[in-house]
Length: 429
Image (cartoon, rainbow, N blue to C red):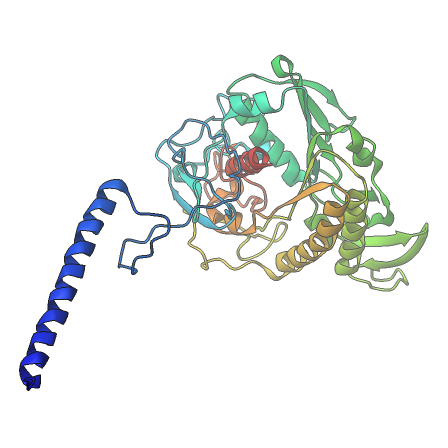
């Protein structure tokens, strides 16, 4: 019997195709069953193109409570990293939360509205960080957080400027009572009775011991006698009793001064004819900040300590005593205003000494944080009193030559937004 191999080959091919067809039908039926009941854990399927879904963050979210206002973030947003100091000034039609009429705590030199500043556009801007939302300052919530606590702002006249801003915003809930002042009325303390909360302004422009010989307009009659190795007890004696503090210094180190170490004159800054070595203000600033930071980092203090960098000025065509002015009436955009050389030098020293101290502070359990408002303020040349540090400076003569203040800040004004940032940092811990 002869086998027809050609016929067998064709029949074999048909059988193979038939078997494959049966397998495919069986697989399809099984697939339908799985889709109705869910995929089995032991089955693998080829990857298919699908919409990207972010993997869940397995780290526990940081709890952030946010006041109810128009800047509130969605409740399901958890921010891991947020740079509150990089942003822009954007229009704020609602304007400030207080005025010179509602807050009697504004000192004359910063009371631009009362002093007759004619424009009001500078009041209608708010600070907006670029990579996150910044809730507006909530005075009632802040006071609740500070119940039975003590705050202090330690430094020079910029700290005094800031404490007025903070008090005015808090006074929208409760008017504080002044309970202390020193003989010169430079250091003061206020009490919020309903919350047993105190806010102090501690005058210590150098943070180290200093003998200063000048009037209220900053006119000196002799060099400052500055002891670079002795901290000013005006603030160090109160330091252990404070729960929160903002420490700062800065432009006072540009003044003519004689430097002392170990009760010995070691040099100076701007002292012609004194037969002393011209060491320069950077020498003194480095020494002082290193000493201050070392004291803080080794203190084992259990509160929250902010170190605030010095603030830029916007004098044009001169400085404080030689005709400088600040005529701008609108904010600048980033990059339009450059920080001045002296301000940059001070800032670099501050950042360098803070970085040195931060690691040591963390090792010792000291909560030390940086407040660097340089960029925020650099874009606000319109926020200074200018000629309106005096009451109605042009009432009698529209062309009168008056001293301008392009260093401090009108209240209300840009400085109020420091409090938004600070409260957010306090809430985040």
